[in-house]
Length: 394
Image 1 (cartoon, helix red, strand yellow):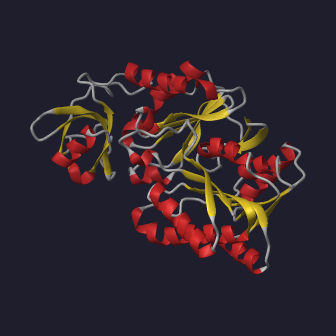
Image 2 (cartoon, rainbow, N blue to C red):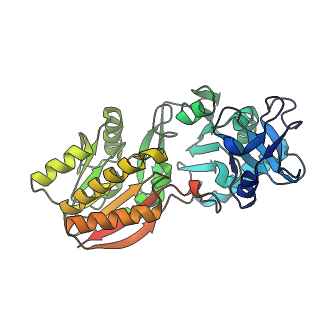
Image 3 (cartoon, rainbow, N blue to C red):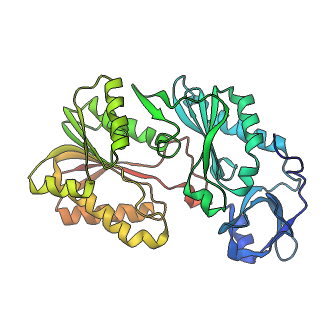
């Protein structure tokens, strides 16, 4: 259970005019520079006011993070265990249509579900929990109790082995919080099945935010397909249902081993995987005069912060330019960016420039974002991080 006194809020934080304006226009974060007075003692949840002593709300407080405050409630009454329980319950209910037996989806998406820095993913009968701020971390015991009550899972795994924890001054850790969790869990997505490594896989085990995009893109795929940054093969296997052949390329031996297991699981015989650097591979294929009918680009975030954006732009442009050159006429390019700092408008402009430099005319067939279990919160552009375009290269 939560620590006694967690919701007995004694401390107050004053924020600057800019911080107050930011909160009132719908963004839940206040940065270090906009905290005027800090609490007298460490406190996971604090009352927030402006310079005129006007009440703003209650927030998680992170004493070592650049993001000092994450707004939890605008109600004048302090938050309670019941508030947290209700937030989790409502978040799960919003995903009712996605909670299929054997499936996987995100149950709680942090700020977008009004539970700042709390992430809960469901894989079959198992849950993976992330608490990515000091305030959320203090709720771990309560969250486990609530999730057991609402979901009755076979096990709950903590995956707090992420850099975001270090930025909060928190220890990185992972392990089973309750019940039993196997190393490999089998899930379904569309008509396919996948083995997921919950303990060591990327994010919480699987890229759930691309689920809707994989299913949508599958219907466009045809012919000879190249899947770049294939990871554990999710896009590749969806494409294999419609393509003559699929080749997946990635630098990770472990990810490719899992991709091959997933291929065998689905009894697909037209998929191969190759270890290699995608940038080098695309250059080599262009020099060799190779051509493909479908190409997928789903790279990791090239711009993890604003300072990395210039070099990231160059990387995104290069892989898209080369993919456009490698495509046959009427070929399909599925291209994504998960870098929040590269905006949707900038990504669109970058693709336009790549098309010009490749001397190809390109149609936009679909303009997509992350899956619906990763909703975007209006007022917080950081929740709109994934951009996915399905293009036809003429």
